[in-house]
Amino acid sequence: MTRVRRFQPLMSLAGMIAVACALLFAAPADAASHKARLSADLADHLTAGSQTIQVIVDGDRATVDALAARYNVTVKKYLKHGAVLTVNAGQLDALSRDESVDHLSGDIPIQSSIVEVTAESIGADQVWAGANGVPPLSGKGIVVAVIDSGIDGRHNALKRRVLHTEDFTGGDGTDGYGHGTHVAAIIAGQIGRSNDTNTYRGLASGAYLVNLRVLDDTGAGTSSSVVAAIDWTIEHKAEYGIGVINLSLGAPVLQPYRDDPMCAAVERAVAAGILVVAAAGNYGTTAEGQIVFGMVTSPGNDPLALTVGAVDAHETARRSDDTLALYSSRGPTRFDLVMKPDLSAPGSHIVSAESTGSYLAQSLPERHVTGNGPNAYIQLSGTSMAAAVVSGAAALLLEERSTLTPGALKAVLQLTSSFMPEAGIAAAGAGNINLVAASLSLIASLPTTTGTTIIAGETIRPDGIAFVATSDPHSATLVWGNTLVWGNTLVWGNTLVWGNTLVWGNTLVWGNTLVWGNTLVWGNTLVWGNTLVWGNTLVWGNTLVWGNTLVWGAGGDTTDWDS
Image (cartoon, rainbow, N blue to C red; front, side):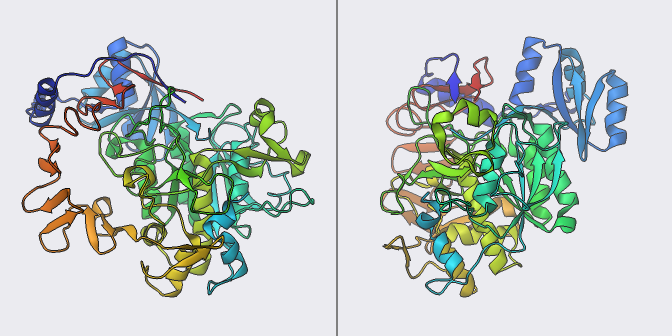
C-alpha cells in the first residue's frame, strides 16, 4: 500500500509557474562546485544527517576501492558495475563532491507487487491447442529467469521446471514468502494433478525457469540484489538459453531512470537480447481510494522494460467486462514522464501454486483455493501476476519466432493488444494483451492492426497501439493505427490532430509550449483544467501533488511504501 504521512496545500498558479520556470531555467552549477546527482532518498538522508546509509556507486572495482579509501567508507557489497557503500551523511556529502562521481543512488528497499479464467480470457487456450489458424505452442525450449522470493520446486506444478537456483539473500533459494512460487507457476506451471486442480496450468507450461531469489521470507529485499541478479542473468544467458526476465517487484522512483541502478541493469539485459517484463506497481489509488497518476515503480519506469498494468477480468473469460484494476499504477513516470505502463494483462484473482508453510499461505488463509501440500493453490492479485502472464505469453511467442528481439517482441504484444479507451494510455498502455492476435501477427511476418480474433466467444479487434522502434530505443514513437500520438517523430505531414482537442506539429510542441485543447500548457507553465495541472488538483514541479491526497517530493514530505 502507499500511504502519505503529511500533506501540504496546493500552491497558487503563479507560484507553480514561478517554481517551474526556476527549475527549467536554473543556471548550471559552476564546475568548481561539482555536486553529483542524488536520488531523493539520499537527499533526505543528507538533510537528516543519517549515520548509516547504503549507497550504490558506479564504477569498476579499482574505482570503488579508491573512493572507499579516500573517504574511509566500508564496501558492503561489490556489484558487476559498482558497489554498495556504507556511509554517514558527512561521507555522503564528500562523495557527492568528488569529481569522479556523476550520480549516487540509495540501495532502496524493494517489495513484491501483489495486493482461473486467465488463459481463456487472453486466448492462450487457443494458442495451446493450435486453433483458429495459430500454431500449437507451449513455450518449449524457452527459459524465463524469475527474480523474486524463490521457487518451491517441491510443488507439483514446478517439479523439474527449475534449471538453476541462485540466492542473492544468502539463502538456498527456498521460497519462504510464497510470492515467487505463485509467479513462477503462472509462467510455466504444469497442469494440476488432482480433479480439483487439473484446470490450473501456467501460460507456457513447456518453458523452463531459472530461480533467482532476491526477496526474503517477508517479501523484502534491496535494489542491489536485483541489480546483481539481472547481471547474473546476462552473464549466464547463453549457458541456460534465457530469453525473458520476470520482475514482479518494484521500488519507488527516486531519481531519473538514467541514474537508477536497476534501470541501468534492465537496459544491459535488453542490450544482451533478453526481454525484461516488469510489474507497474500497485499504487493506482491512495489509501482513501483516490485515483492517482505517476506512481509506476522502478524498474518499470525504464523505457526499455515491458511494463505491465493489471486488468480485472471479474472472474469471467469474457473480455467485454474487463476493466483496469483500480490498484494498478498509472503513468507517466516520475522525473522522466515516460508513458507507462506499456500494456496490461489479467492480474486480479489469479489462481496459482501455493508454497506450503510460506508467509503468504499462513497470513492469507482465506485466499487458499484448493489442494494441499505440493498440490495447493492460492488466489492472489496484483501487477505481479499480470507481469507473469505477459512473461508466459512472451515465452509462447518466442517459441513461435525465436529470432524476435526484445524490442520486436514488445512491439508485437503492444500492437496486437486491445485498447481500453475507458482507462486510457496512461493507465492501461496499449491495452489488454491479445495472445491470439499476437501469434497470428507473427504468421503474417509483420504486426498488423487489421482483422479480428475470437476470444471466449467474443469478436475482439486489436486496436493497433504500439511503440515503433527507432535508432534510439529511448525515443521510440507511439502510433495509434496510422496516426502518431506520442513521440518526437511526426507522421501525417507536419501537423497531427487527435480528435478535436490536440494539435501537435509546427504550431505546438510537447516540451515548452504544448497546448492540449485550451487548458494545458506543459513546460514552462503547467495548467491542466481550469486551475491546476491534472483535473483540478495536480501540481507538477519540484514537489508533485497528484490527485487530492498524494504528496510526493523532496521538500520534506515523504511517502511510505510498505506491504
